[in-house]
View 1 (cartoon, rainbow, N blue to C red):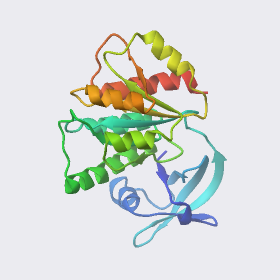
View 2: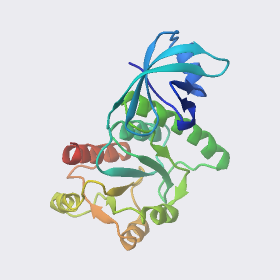
View 3: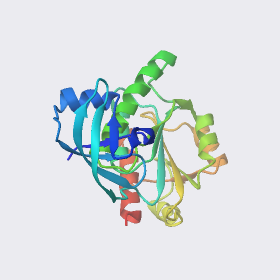
View 4: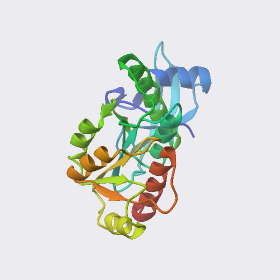
Length: 245
């Protein structure tokens, strides 16, 4: 069954309006008709079972048939601060980490990032990344659409991460995995966790020191060297194993 997200202000009485890109997707891509059954979420744990009542000029009018509760979120709120990678790798990171439960993705321009985005390119990329995030949240039946934040530098990223309960930075030269186990064992349900992943060229020594000064735990992800687009997925999988109820 197809799942869509609606803004709270588009839910009124027994009707829900789906507009914007959803309108075109439902009408012209999926080619759903009046009477088609769908699910709608609005960022909380409520799931609205609906059928399409009609198509307006710019919105799909849905009638609510029932409401249930469904919590599909991880007990730990994980945000991925991803060092900008090449080409489509950022899209892979966004799509897959959202499927695995990340609540926020922050693209970070780091010293060894090969990709450099000017203001116009960044704006276009963000638009596409946010579309991918929404599609991934719908596909994996998340309770909310995770945020894809504006591109920032490491200094700003660490400033934002200072508000989190834990900051983790996987690093290929970090001490053994036993330290990683101890760090992860200190995380509790309800905690917010910022995970910093370096780009293809890795994390520069100055960036590592800046992260340490900001309170980051430098951890290992094992004996193998992982690609930048693999590291976050591996850590999200571990979070699911540890905290999924």
